Length: 154
Image 1 (cartoon, helix red, strand yellow):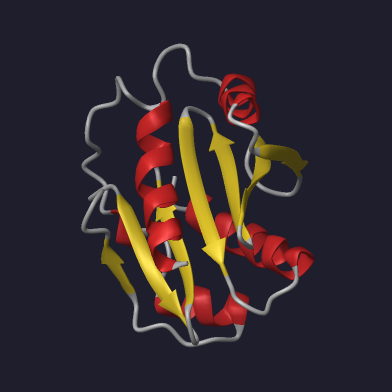
Image 2: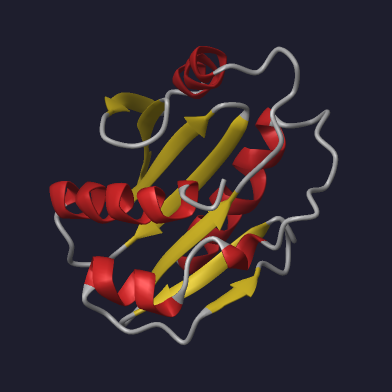
């Protein structure tokens, strides 16, 4: 499961930001250990930069969970609708989310993996969660809480 999450966290942002330049922002600066503990009730040793994609920060959570965060740069033609449509074309179900950013949607990656994509102005943040044993509704609730923290950095 960790390999699947790492691959999704590493590949999906790249697929939608091919024209993007590397960001000067540390992806591990978006969420703290305290943010994750507060949202999940589980401990984390803190985030570490993904070995495959340095624009992604992975947080190991509890026993076998992972939360990844990235903030890819949007290309000039990349909009929330275009990104959601591209995911749907790949047979990845999307669903609107409320309560964070200017626009947000969930993407159900399969295998219990949930991704929250949120936009604030021209900023784009993706949080991918795999929390074994957590119901989908609870995972989405955690994603919303964490996304609010991440978007507050902009």
